[in-house]
Image (cartoon, rainbow, N blue to C red):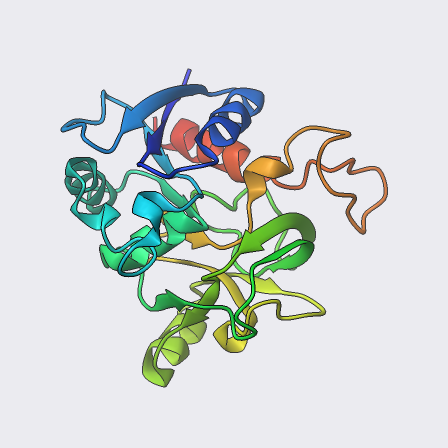
Length: 233
């Protein structure tokens, strides 16, 4: 059984939800802590949402110096699948595993809503269970959710197919080019602002546009990681 580590920083809120998502997908969640110096032999890592270190200085800015992140960066550079959700996405940009940055929402308010996303790249370790162009409904909750990057970086992401998800119908936070999530060149590191771990169990996640999905649109993220690990075994 694939072992997927879920990192808890001071101020993390969604670590238990992420661990439950891993379990529902068929993996074994492993608790990892910010002060750990090893990854306990896990096969993949999830950096969950929350407000690590209270988002002091800048969202994710302090977490990048946690001992565990040195191990995560090394593992990601070696090809290990790493997923950053919301605050985890912010941390991934701070450690430069993903380009760009996250700033305050353009309306300067916290937002919580069910958000439709379009899958723009289904060839990553965290998106292969989806169809290209598929629209999924995932809960969104953030205050520093506006993805920004310079035009050259944005053009490179577009040209290289590294925009993983895009907001549909409405851009909830002013993110450049409606970008909701991106991937690195290798496709093993993915960061996104919405929360797939809150859409993994029928009856508890948001209704999607596709009849019969039952609020489980986020489960594909975690199933994708298991697929990728099985394919590389």
